[in-house]
Length: 361
Image (tube, rainbow, N blue to C red; front, side, top):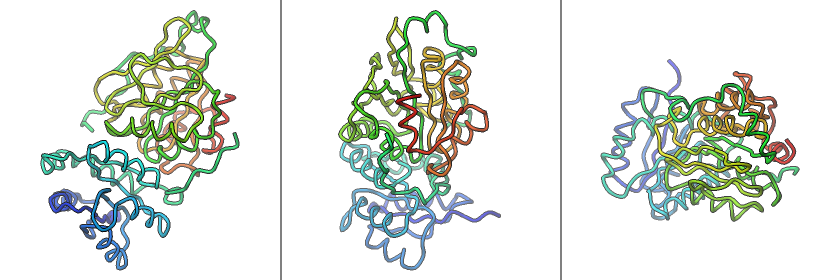
């Protein structure tokens, strides 16, 4: 029998601790080693035993979750799953936690908490399992400047048909404007910061899927925008993709690229979960393959699972250039690994080289 994942719960809500303890105690491969009402009590437990994964609230008395997280990452980097409220303040604080090294987000409402947590049990268990697989050496690192869930797993077919191996040649003749599509998940908030902050103001238009819950992507985009020379914002339906702009798919919506004449635009739409995600990297990559073809570069980065692997292969088959992030620089070498298995990546490279690919192909 494989080793169980030891989990420490840190949340000031007795209801949350009680429900999470019940959920996780019924999961065969997870062991809850303890629960604490705040980081001060948690530190007493950590002095006796160290967990594989910490499930952490962000707004707590005596010591807030961000301060505690930074302390953990400086002393002994450990995978942390943030359990945060669905409020603007909660979203902003959670993004600070992601920047400090947290790897997953579980959202919770301010009302109906117990029922919500029970319904979200599969998501929580999945997040803990994903966190347990991260490369702890890459947790909490500040990026160095570059050198310049349903039972049925749907595919991108649920949103749009494939490009049949190549994008429309006549349409390609109408424009030479290049676009870049990035797809990432666990560890992606830090990876995207490293890449996007390295780009100069003039660079190809960029479209991004980062697996992230609804209401968090706008704050995430705003944070990146404050750090980058380029403009970064959450995508709106019919936004034009243009040089110097990065559009991030809103949480809870799919984002697809389309073209009108010589210009590329995004469609932000509802739809089923694809590869258990919405937004899905496969949906974005397929649309780019179909409408941008050889004018596009696709980059698949750190993340759990295989979302984006098949879409990256479609981009390659349509004449685009493709890249996968290497294992050494990934927090989780899942999505890039699956793309490499499919021979979808022309190149495999470290995080610090990806900015150069965006600029020079």
